[in-house]
Image (cartoon, rainbow, N blue to C red; front, top):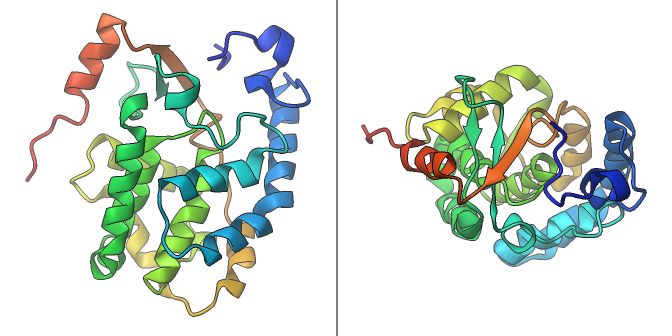
Length: 245
């Protein structure tokens, strides 16, 4: 099923992109060109921010993707507040349920609070990433936006992840497990071996260039349903319901 939350794919293309493209490969290539053309501006914006808040997350997305998506910088709660978004099918053991639209802002703000505890952040590097990813603020461009936010937050805690040494598929599995069970340290365990000291943002372009599959949260098996669907309501009540250890 084509991801078509606006219901106008036939006339406006994938997610109302500015070129009205429909072919997945063309969309992916054009979207990434917009990202590459804007990444320096986004990084410079974040570096100048005294503190990173929810508005900064929205602005980063707008900076990165407004050249391709006219709605860039607006979250799901503003665009499609009536829809729930998932990754994978319900019968898939790694089926991912992203945050309800009205709770996205709170979820991101909680991640930012966690990152403010710099020692905890470094000791548990997957916790903040998992929280940001579970919020899934945008219809597309989440992986790359979250990455830049995460890199700035970790820089302020004086560490970085050596992303060039990570494996896309293993990382996405760990991230999916983290979202489903955020208290069990799945992503902490995966990322800890790649934690490194950092003293300059000058190292970032090379790091970002070494990361593969940044759109893994946005283009692979994304589905949606109306929030008032009884089955969806039931799913939200049971998902991430494991007791804390």
